[in-house]
Each structure stands twice: as structure tokens, then as C-alpha cells.
Length: 286
Image 1 (spheres, rainbow, N blue to C red):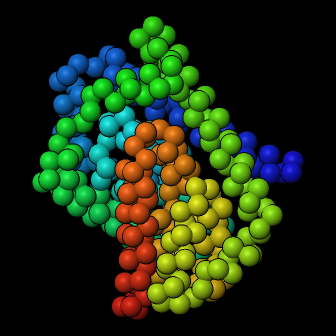
Image 2 (cartoon, rainbow, N blue to C red):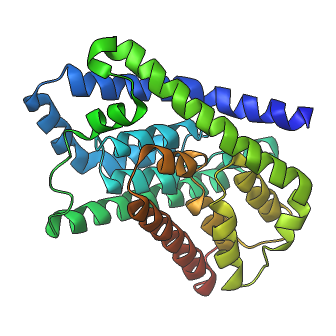
């Protein structure tokens, strides 16, 4: 139990800088920037999926948490959020490097995740813009988040308000991570791994579901299964594409639209599974 507590605290503490910086940016946007600056952010959102995918490939789930909070405040678009989720590599890259996997193989896998993230992110934003559902960023959304947290942003100033938001979400992450770590500990990684079968259709479906677990354990399990030749490349990619780290757990805390959150998860899962199955069917190899 002590080891579980330690792992939980370590995982959560790693996210603190990302959380604070993200909320500081959001507070600054809401209370210090004028309408012209906000419009500039909206226009920059057109390249958001490209930037988000590039930043997401770095081995740190903290950026998916930051992107989630920025989306909840409607600072970035849905396409950018999905792009970050799809490209996020979490623990995959460190494991590959520690196992002395070829740099070319690593770059190919990261490249696949990067390109899928950019393409899907841009596609989502284009579609949403066409149907006029993503045309305006809600300028009062960050203020609404402030009211929900009862932090009284205007009175406290941006630093204190950012700190209050950070501590609130930090506590939430600790609770969620602790519960997941307990489940993984008592169920066992080997037992979880046994559910991921090396089959062209079923493999990516199950691996994609494992990837949705909002914890670094999912990427560790999936990567090690691939290295052990237990699952195929398609199944691994399915699990890694759906794996967004703690970002998915934070989504339900930061974004008050439950139906929207569920649709985001379904969308992420569908993209990951379909990508994995297509790789299996065409016999894609690296």
C-alpha cells in the first residue's frame, strides 16, 4: 500500500508545473487580454492541431492535462485537443529507449502518431467550422470555471486564482490515480495483459479500451506486450492512440458538459481502433 501511495504522489506531483502554468495562462487570457488578443488566439487555432500533435509526442502526459484544461476554457479547439490526445506517447518512448529499440523504428511510430493526430485534428476543426458549432470560442467559459471553483478570480488576482485551480485539480488527480493504481496492483498487469489478444480485429478493439485507462500503466502494459511479441503493431498503435494519460480523467473535472466528454472519448476510441484495424488488414509493418 505504501508503494501505491508513493507512485500516486509521484505521478501527481509531476503534473503540478503543467497545471499551474496552464491555469496561469487561462487567467491571464480572461482578465488581462483584450478582445483583439482573444480573436488572435481563435485565428491561431487553425494551426492548433499541428502544434498540439508536435508537442504531444514528447513523453509526458502533463501536456494532455494542460490541453484538456485549455479546451475546457475554450482556449483551444476540439481538433487541437484530439490531436494532442492521439499523439501523446506517455511512457512508450522511455520504454523503447531503455530497451534499445532502433531509433528509426521509434521515429516511425512517433511519426505515425504525429501524422494521424494532425490529420484527424484538422479534419475535426474543418467539419465543426462547416456546421457552425466551433465558430466562436465561449469567452465567458474561463470565468464560469472560476465560479464553479468559488475562487473569485477578479478579487484574488491571476496568481492566487491559478493556484486555487491547480490545487483543486491536483487533489482530484491524486484521488483518481490512487484508485486506478489500487486496481492495477490487485488485478495485476499480467491479468490485464491477458485480455489483449493478438487478433486482427479483436486485438485493436481491446488494446484501444486498455489505452483509455487514465494512467501511465496502460501505455506501459501495451508497450511491453508489443516488445514481448504478444500483440501486433496494429494493436499497439490502437492502444497508444487512445491513451491520453490523466488527461481523460481531468476532462470530466474541468469540462462540465458530460455528454460532450463522452463523445470525445468515443471519438478518440473509434479513431484509435479503426487506425489499428486498418494497419492489421493492410499488413502494415515498420
